[in-house]
Image (cartoon, rainbow, N blue to C red):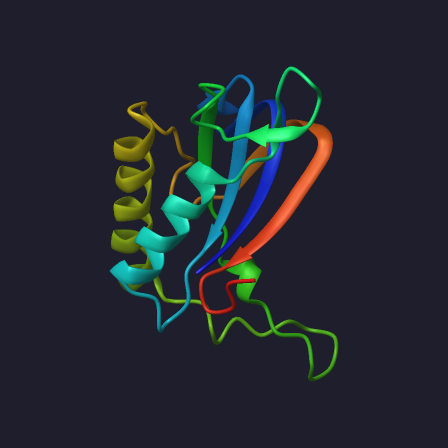
Length: 150
């Protein structure tokens, strides 16, 4: 499981011009699920995201988590995080899990985030052509990979 994490002042996702998910300050999560991902991957990833200390405290030191500062989270399914471009110039999506595998895992991931944060986690529409808008804060952008925890 790969998640591109962006600390934002605000973010939204729209489909056909209609906003289907939006947040104020918090984290925008672009979520990619691969064929080998399991509930173990999503649980580890959700806990790590909720506890990452990437928000400033009173001394302007990144020492607070999204939970500590009561921030919000917006999750958007993003199969292209598993694009492979080592053969030619057209990416291959072979490692990205198909919808019948990734959609239930994505939904479980969102539920886990909501459980850990005690807040609803808005999303885009799985499989739709989505437009994401954000105001990146910092900018702070991190890539988290459950198969390569650094």
